[in-house]
Every structure is written in C-alpha cells, then in structure tokens.
Image: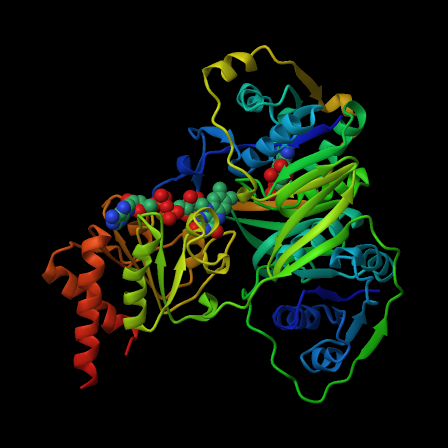
Length: 255
Length: 322
Ligand SMILES: Cc1cc2nc3c(=O)[nH]c(=O)nc-3n(C[C@H](O)[C@H](O)[C@H](O)COP(=O)(O)OP(=O)(O)OC[C@H]3O[C@@H](n4cnc5c(N)ncnc54)[C@H](O)[C@@H]3O)c2cc1C
Ligand SMILES: Nc1ncnc2c1ncn2[C@@H]1O[C@H](COP(=O)(O)O)[C@@H](O)[C@H]1O
C-alpha cells in the first residue's frame, strides 16, 4: 500500500497584487488566495498514483490560520485527509523554517512512502522546501520530475534537466518535486466539493510541535519591481504599422 | 577558516560565478575556491580566471548523479567554514544548493539577481524576485555560510587575469547515494540560441496553430532574429524547444529588440525580458498587460498585422541597403 503525502501552499493570487500609486509599496490586503499553481500538479500526481496503486493520499500545508480556506479546496482535488499546521506566525516563513515545520509535523503524525512537492511555490518560488524537507527527514529525493512510476518499493523518475533527461531509480520512502508537464490536474466538480466537506482535517498547532523554528534568512524589504517603459500604442492600420516600423528601426539599432 | 566558494555545472557558469566571487573575496580579504569534477584540465583555467583554490571532486560511479557529491561538499564546508557559498541556479544546482543549505542549517537566497555587502562589509544584502517577478525581495542570511543560487547569465563571465597561481586539492570520495541513474537521454544540440540573440520574436498562445509559426518565422528572418516563446508554447504545446521559452522559470534574455506576438504579458513571462533594450508587442486586446511593459505596441490581430509588418520591415530594410 502506497502512503503518499502531498505538500501544498496557499498563496496570494498574482493577479491581485497592486501597488500604491507613486510608490513601490505593495497593497496586498484585498488580495485573494489560491492553492499555488504548481502544487496542483503535485496534488494530481499523488491522487492519480493512489488510484493506480491503492493506498492513501494526505495533503499537508503550513500557514497562518487564514489558510484554513485552502483545506476544502485541496480535499476537493482528491486527497482523503488534510493536515493543517498553523500558527499566526506562520505566514512569513522562509523556506528553511517551512521545511523544518513540515518535517517536524510529518515525523510526529504521518506515515508515508512517498512525498510529492511542487516545482516551486507561486509566491516565493524558492524551490527549496522539497529538497530541504527530504534532508530533514533523511530520505532520498530528486527534483524536476516530468514522469513518475511506482514499482513496488521503488520509484522510477524521469528528470528534465538543462542537458537532457536523466532517469533515476529511488528506493522508497522518497521525496520528489514535480514539473507541470507531469500531468493535467482535474477540475473538481460539485460532487467533489460536497465530498470534501466530509473529509477529515487534522489541526496541528505550533505548540504541538514542541520546538521553535528560527529563520536563517531575514527579509529586509519587499517592493514592487518597476518596469517603466514608453507605452506607446499604434493601431493595426497600414499607416500606423509603417510608423511603428520607422520607430523600431530608428531606436532599435537594426540594419 | 573562510573563503568564498562557488559550485557550477559547467565552465560557462563557473566563470560567471568566479567574476562575482572575486569581487566579494577581495572585500572580505579572503580566497575564492571553485569546485570541479570530471575535467581536471580546467583547474588551471579556473585559477587563471580568479580561483585561488580548485577543489576537485572524485569521479562518480557510472550510475551516480551529480547530487551524490552533496555529502562530500557538506563535509568540506563543515571543515573549512566558508563565509559565502554561491551556486549556479541550473536545474541540478538549485537542488544541490537547497540540500547543502539544509544540511548546513543555513539560509539560501534562491535565484539571487544582485548582491552587495551591507555597511559592516561582512553581511550580504541579496535581491531576488518574488510573486512571479512582480516584486523584489531583499534578504540577508543570518547564518554561515551565506548562500545564494545565481541564475545563468546574471553576471558576465570572469576574464583571464594573467599570471596567477593557485592550489589544486582533491577531495576524498563519498559513499554512493540511494538515487541511481538507470538511463540518460542527452538533448540534441539545438540550432540558434535565444540567450544571446540581438533580436527576439517571441510567440504566445495568441497563435492558433503550429503551422502559423511560419508567419512569425518570416518576420524573424527579415530582422535577423531568433524565435522564442512563452512557457505554454514550449511546455504544453511543444511547438518550440524548451530552451526557447522566456521567463521566471525559463530563459532570461537581454536582446536589443524583443517583439512579443500574441502574449498576454503575465509577470512570470515579463520577468525574463526586463533587461531588453526595446520591448514591443502585438496583441488584439488593448488592455493586455504586455502593453504596460512595452515601449511600442500594435493593437491588432496578429494574423493581419504580422504579414504587413514583415512586408514593411522588408521594404524599409531593403531601401536602407540600396
Ligand atoms: C511559478 C510560475 C512560473 C512561470 N514561469 C513562466 C515562464 O518562465 N515563462 C512564461 O512564459 N510563463 C511562465 N508561467 C506562465 C505564465 O503565468 C503565463 O501563463 C504564460 O506566460 C502565458 O502565456 P501566453 O501569454 O502565451 O498566453 P495567454 O496568457 O493565454 O495570452 C495569449 C494572448 O494572446 C492574445 N491573442 C489571442 N489571439 C490573438 C490574435 N489573433 N492576435 C493578437 N493577439 C491575440 C490574447 O489577447 C492574450 O493576451 C509561469 C507561471 C507560474 C505560476
Ligand atoms: N507553507 C507550505 N506548506 C506546505 N508545503 C509547502 C509550503 N511552502 C512550500 N511548500 C512545498 O514546497 C514546494 C516548494 O516551495 P518553495 O521552496 O517555497 O518554492 C511547494 O511547491 C510545495 O510543494
């Protein structure tokens, strides 16, 4: 029986990020949140492996209590149980802390054969939590997985690297981080959403973990990145296209 | 002990990191050490380009991936206690850096885009992009070594510094790891490289079908440019090779001219063209985000605009030559 854990993050929707006029300050109060795009592939991979091999899939997230909204969403995507590691201080974690918290929660409460993480989180995109979690749990791991097969007590993973594909065999228990091309996440229907509200959620509080998690990285500022450009628009009629060509040739250094 | 360490998959990436490391080491009054494997010939080359010490990693068993070096590197780091450890942000480099940082219990600035010392001259202030590139996060590392991964081509390669001497030291082999390679499929070399093209014509999902790439290719030919694309074109539709997609998780490019065709301009893509000299866009939606980050845009259907644009460029360039 294959026991799978999938790790996901509840992140600000990019589209809602606004800056205050005339400054680089970010206005995030009104932003909505969603399951990080890349984690949807990790969730789908876990659920479809479970469908093939039997066993179980649990989803786990670390966040502030506000991330509770993510649980119904994640459960509607197929996992049968969710673990919610939460504390008001857990919304500004850096990757080493997130990985330690996940490791601590998993060690104390979950049994597993395979842990699946996304390529990177939609907000920080540090691509660290998966590898660090594997190190903290002292299990073998690999990243950039574009195809995953389970054979008994080992997995075969195709990794997409800069110079080609590398196929690796890893004994379980193991951790992988997966790329978007690994699958096409299903879209939950009404039935899935209804089923989700009946699935169990395990609450894990910071105090349950019996240790503190100090940051290794300190954020000094987060400011909007400015990209000021001319912003001149032309229409698609012949005269305008000719003007466009003239400007490009003049300023663009083409000969 | 101390030092600025660098680790990169290949020579090009190593030279870029040597360039950064040399500047940092000078300010700290310490040495630069570079890791090397497979090709000990390069040791002298790295020394000529600024390394004071080259640490040679022993060759691996046939079925061992590069990540099998992690225990050896970590052990050495525990012994030598470097001040700073920079790793090239390639697919492997990112995994190796995160796992090394995990074992050393230290902070890692992923995808660092700029770094400098603070007023104490010891602590690095490092910048990286967050929210898909919409914001810049500035971080410092509270632990040792201060680690960062640096995306390919973020910095210029080091130049040879003439007569330099350095040490070459071989490290002891570690035990084989649990991850075993069972097959390798090297990628065929692609012609044309978007990373140093002067002119890039970049296509997005506005294109309806693969055959229509011909329209875009024609414009590229007239301008002497290369074809590039957004992530979905490469990763989902597979119309163009993966190394031609631009953005946060793809290539970062610095062409003289970028022309985006049928691209919405979402931040994860736009992040990759931040350093283009001139950004142009063609999109039928006048409110498309790409126009907000463009110098010049054409609002219109690419299927009517492209042929006309190609014709006009051809005419103008032809006229200029006569
Ligand atoms: C963590 C993360 C990392 C990512 N990394 C990258 C990355 O590195 N690179 C990348 O590109 N993406 C990346 N993405 C994806 C990115 O968010 C966008 O989904 C993607 O860039 C959109 O591609 P597009 O502009 O081609 O398609 P769309 O967003 O679908 O835009 C198509 C555009 O074409 C226009 N159009 C349609 N028909 C026509 C026509 N006939 N004539 C003219 N215009 C037309 C439409 O108005 C629209 O604006 C990433 C996403 C995440 C979450
Ligand atoms: N707060 C979190 N809770 C659970 N999993 C997380 C969390 N943050 C990151 N992850 C997992 O780690 C992956 C990489 O995240 P990151 O290192 O932030 O880019 C994500 O795709 C998730 O699978």
